[in-house]
Length: 246
Figure 1 (cartoon, rainbow, N blue to C red):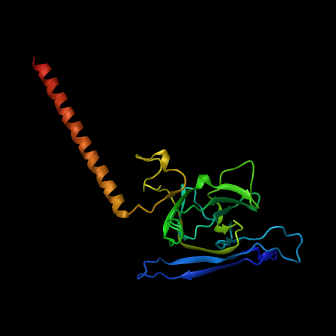
Figure 2: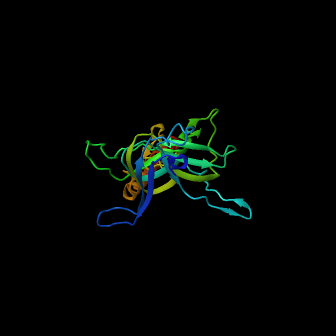
């Protein structure tokens, strides 16, 4: 979807790419095109152009009604992306009373094009956004009062570019999923969780090997604690027996 629906001339395309092992590139889609803020000459009612967006198709319906996605058990939305650094927004639409309401959050990246130096290329990275941090909006404006997202009835996930900066844009997405892992690879609410793990976070440094080592460390620590506890109990029993003999 672009401003062409109201007479604008912005262009947007979705291109699919297969995985390339030689280049270490995952299978992904590329959201790219060109933004223009030119207003249509024959539409005096149109006051703003310069946007592009996409979303997934609806799941459809059954005999029992409309189908939805449920992310109710999860705390975060994770995305594997490679960005040019422009101001993209994540859009989540639910089965709201007001159909045009959507929940939005900025797609904040760390390794986008130009992040290291003016000519540095973009790198693949995983961005994690807390679902609680999404803001309900309507037609680009924050709605009041705010309300929690209806996580058990999600209609669509999408990404939009609404910075209205003329020029090309390029964003690649290889995956999008809901998760309870924070950026440290921990489950929120479990031992070791800290308040600083909330908010926009990244899973780039979390690997299966690191998670395995963490589990081994916890088992090792538990074993040491049990040994200390047994030794203390034995010492206590010895003292008790000594007092009884005297």
